[in-house]
Image (cartoon, rainbow, N blue to C red; front, side):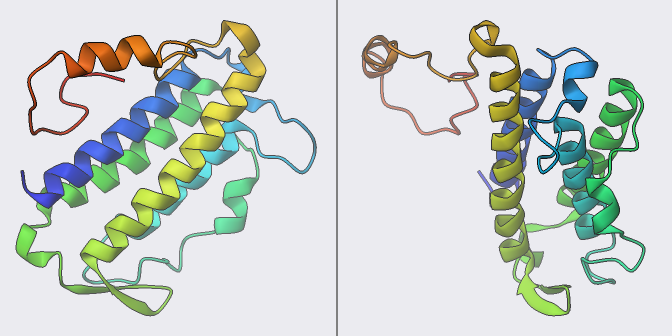
Length: 184
């Protein structure tokens, strides 16, 4: 499997974790904050999407921190509905996935710039594969706190590791991406 396909699968996996958490919430819960210093899930989604729009638009022609990006604005909730949040969220992911679909394997070593600092396309992808899951973890954590015991687990449920591992080790060894089986 080429590296770009692996990167795409990882991004899809984390997008899916966030969305499985968001799907468990009501419209109002998407906008809840623990206190004035915390971000709501809607704000975190806005920030991730804003970052994607900036980082992945015209990566070979422009700096990844676009002049038109207003990062501070990303942390102000201006959405009215869950549908608006999801529309903006999906638009950011569309920019990322489009860029990954047009970048070739031999371009991964090309230099691009983020805030005037050069890095390879590969390094920029890895940077965002750390950044977005960091925020996805926040989304999952907030959703779990909001839903409490009714939150549907996104991974192996507590107390089920031994049985899960027994099932996995009963199978023949294979080489593939961990998301290919839709397993936890």
